[in-house]
Amino acid sequence: MAINKKQPSLFRRIIVLSTFGGLLFGYDTGVINGALPFMSEPDQLDLTPFAEGLVAASLLLGAAVGAVSGGQLSDFIGRRQTIKYLAIMFFVTTLGCTLAPNMEVMVLFRFLLGLAVGGASVTVPTYLAEMSPASNRGRVVTVNELMIVTGQLLAFTINAVLGNLMGDSSYVWRFMLIVASLPAIVLFIGMLRVPESPRWLVSQSRNEDAHRVLKQIRQEKDAQKELTEIRDSYEHEKGLPKARFKDLATPWVRKLLFLGIGLAIVQQITGVNSIMYYGTNILRDAGFATNAALVANVANGMISVIATVIGIYLLGKVGRRPMLLTGQIGVIISLLLIAACSYMFQGSAALPYLVIGLTVAFLGFMQGAIAPVTWLMLSEIFPLRLRGLGMGFSVLCLWLINFMISLFFPLLLSSFGLTATFLVFAILNIVAALFVKRYVPETKGRTLEELEQQFRAKGDKDTAKTNLA
Image 1 (cartoon, rainbow, N blue to C red):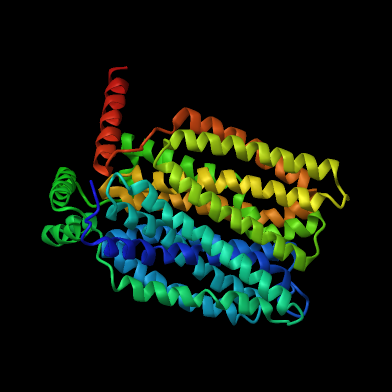
Image 2: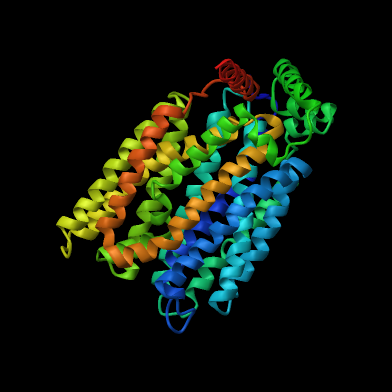
């Protein structure tokens, strides 16, 4: 299938504007990296190591809730409308965090901000997957991952600039946080100018509207063919009751849910977000001063963007499984080297430079292979009727693991140091690599409807074998 060459600007607009949700996702999760050292000062929020973890992780707990509720909301009112409401929530909660007078208010608004982040983490990739032709879907969906890491790079850069220019100001962290209100405004206005997902429109019996949208973003013959595929898939399930949690107990769907949760856990136990949220603290622990750590941390954001661009290119050339396995091997080696160097060079002037170099290598493998494939496959594997619910439940688990790691990472780092902390992550990733090798299928080059038929047929076959046994 090909994009309508008469309307390339519309398709580009859909990609750019909707992925401002990913940009906000990235900025709001990355800005805490540089803001924490300043808001932790006695004359500010006076945070202990556990309180730092609570401030950072409260967003992630909200994101876990937002992932499930956002998926269900997008099934009910549509992908586009959901993203508009999320933009409003991003704006309001950003103001709340910026003006927070104490830790309790900060935690509350970070949790509410997390609802928007979690909703965006489900709805934006789903919207992009459903707007994209099968031949371009991998690259288009992973543009959202590029915007996430771009948002984190933007956060790290603004943190470094404000931290060095306004480091003497007691309220520099408030300026770091308020910047996120601007892309929230762009997201809201932008979603007024793009169409709804044709797949969601078909699910609402609005076939003519779906065809009109497809003709805007596909060539005519491809638009009709894709509409037929979507309608056939939907008609097959139309007689079934509305998606509920109990539907996830169907044997073949349960296997997909197992796969989705597994992919979510694989991404999070890399420990990537301990670096993205606490990179400044890690570099300070390795030997950098705060201002130097803020500047050095920009390198983590830069490599994340570069690696994601490379990953998007590779998705069009290489299968999902090989990319995941290559990423896992690179991550394991990087984590083992960080643990080894922090043990052998403890107290050395070379240690902070070794750590920043190895975290850059780690992020290259993580953001260039594991992250884009994870978000893409989560948007691919679930059937239309259960896509919002299934992806939402998988991403719920992703955010819960993220929450646990982020909550306890400052305590682990302060209690056990760099060596033991990163050695634990290395061991966890060996287990993750074994999971990928054993359970993750290849999905490259197939339409969403073809994937559904494949998974359903395999599930029916396995059920028949079980009944015979």
